[in-house]
Amino acid sequence: MKKRVAVVLFNLGGPDKGEDVRPFLFNFFMDKNILRLPFPLRLPLAALVSFRRSRREAANSYGLLGGGSPLLGNTWEQARALKSVLDAYEGFEHEVFVCMRYWDPRAAAVAAQVKNWKPERIVLLPLYPQYSTTTTRSSLQEWNRACVRVEMDIPTSLVCCYPEAKGFLSASAKKIGQAYEQALRDTQARGFKPPRLLFSAHGLPEDIIYEGDPYQAQCEQSARAIVKELSVPGLDWSICYQSRVGPKKWIGPSTEEELARAAQDGVPVIVYPHAFVSEHVETLVEIEIEYRHKAEQLGIPYFSRVPTVGADKDFIEDLASTVVSHARQSGIYPYGGSRVCPLSSRQCCMAECCVNSGASWNGQLAA
Image (cartoon, rainbow, N blue to C red):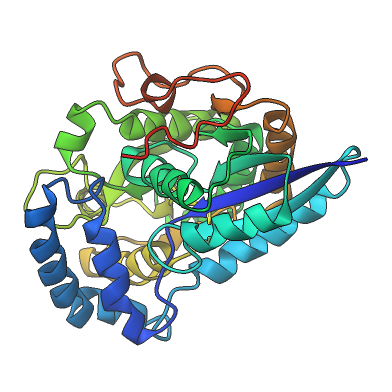
């Protein structure tokens, strides 16, 4: 008999329509991993920020996408592609579930669905290549709380990160390479320098990194590994960070600063969002529309956005192989099995959670 394995894809989530924007943002800012304040302070501030942003920045951004986010649809496309590949593995029966952090379907409903399916094992697979307390840990905490509520105690394995996964690197390099060759064709005849590749990741406040969050280090790992995979002699590239919110100092350089530097240097620009694997508001609006407009204002001679890996064959097949590997064990392991975070990253997922060999660990990181 085939072993039943439930695969749960973690992702951020997004509003389905215009009236969902405010409650979606409220859920986001109420997360203690995002707004790191005591509950009595976090509640009114989350209400205020979500109200203001739902009437201004966020409303405008989602309005450009028809009022809602395409993230859920894109994630389900990845889920179907993953299920198709997993179905070819003998000895297992897989079902793939989508679990969003800040909008439906959320962990409470998904955990109940998983329990009703009666799997023998669960593999949690975040669609965040780089681990952060603001993404994977937050999703894991909500998942663990949901499992406690539905009284589900099933051996579980978490793929905590995969910043240098083979499929992710090859899919990224393939998409960047296509954009790079197109940029060369469009600009060299006009006498411009070779294009500069900007790896643009979602930013974080510096204090989160100082607390030991490994996200920035893993973003840098991914960028270096993709550049190596590209193997373009003398490639001009840099890492930058987007989506700043609030008055705190954020990690840098910002994407806006790198665009300004590219304008000063007179170089074409290619932007690749290497911390995202699914298209959503930050790729389709912030990069494609807002940064493209900024590049035109600055006089940058050429601007191109590289699509995310999405349901690319190399990426999905490598994820499937990782799922099968993790289905044979319980606990928390990155792609490849060994810790990838620098030792200075005190909030590495493997450091924060004990790695068990048998029973599930649904209670861990639930606080």
